[in-house]
Length: 165
Length: 139
Image (cartoon, rainbow over all chains, first blue to last red; front, top):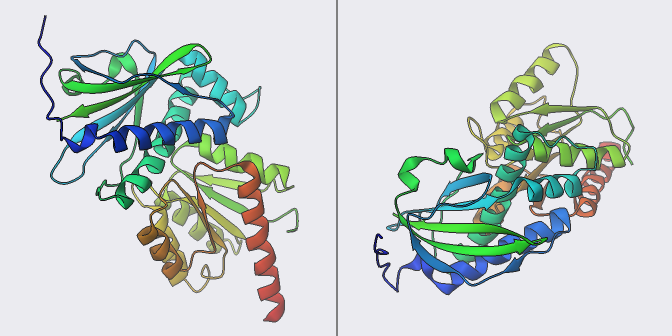
């Protein structure tokens, strides 16, 4: 078993303010755009963690001099619910539509958190979200230490993953 | 309210957001909507329309896009004598003060921060449209 690489306790990306503002960004976005409630659970730190989900979105998380990634992971059943709530019951829920939807939604998660965090001293840059199937996540992002923030939506677990590079 | 034949250009790299905006426009009675996937694509469509002596009456654009960002599209439109009067709404997840100031300085008509309710988007579109009608009458 690989030992979990120790992340310095003072690392800004695992600051409670980051966890709070990213979680609030997710909660607000899902509530306003899709009338869906997210129920957050206790975060944990893992080494070489693999999200047990269908779809993921990865974004850069850079605030000089710190480098990282933020990823959002969802199962298809939740994504279908989000699409139907945002558009309508007849909206397409093919794989391409699901990836596109989660790219846009993750853009909002990040944007909401970025605004609050930059107002409190971070210098997070703009980034374009990259959605993909979870199994196709870039390998370079997989062998790392990360903080995972699980949250429940309609009895399904979704995840926010903050990777320290 | 605008006339129902009002022609909108909706610009976003994610089709989900283009669909959300189109749905809001449809609920307001506007169905003449052309889509563009980034600022460059939007500029091409605006110029193609001008070449045919056609006009877009309203632009609704995302900020953060590949190839050409929404703020660059806004600045390009404001520099064009034929496009500078077209109302321009930025719909964006970026709501930092510096960005809002940049957009206002560039001449944005209204700024909608994501996430937003359909009601907010619709009210901003109507507000800009009404303001545009008043300004046209004044001219």
